Image 1 (cartoon, protein in one colour):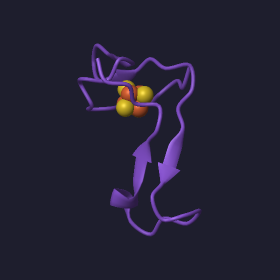
Image 2: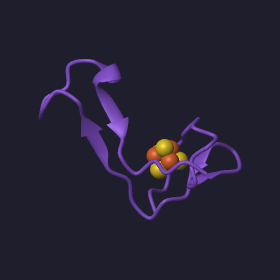
Image 3: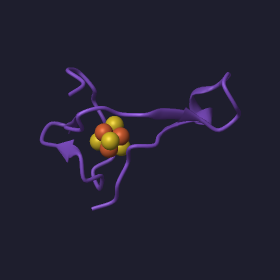
Image 4: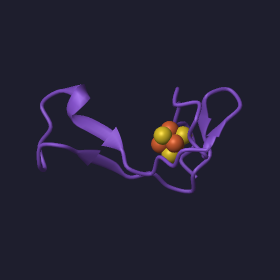
Length: 50
Ligand code: SF4
């Protein structure tokens, strides 16, 4: 499990108390290929809606 991943996405299956991510691992993707330039160009692909 990532030891210190905070996440505010409350409706994700992996979101735990205290806004902690409880997934064994997470995958972060870029929407613009391998080199994102801004924060908004990235996302958590591990997200699963509750
Ligand atoms: S899997 Fe991604 S979206 Fe879900 S709690 Fe973890 S960091 Fe947040």
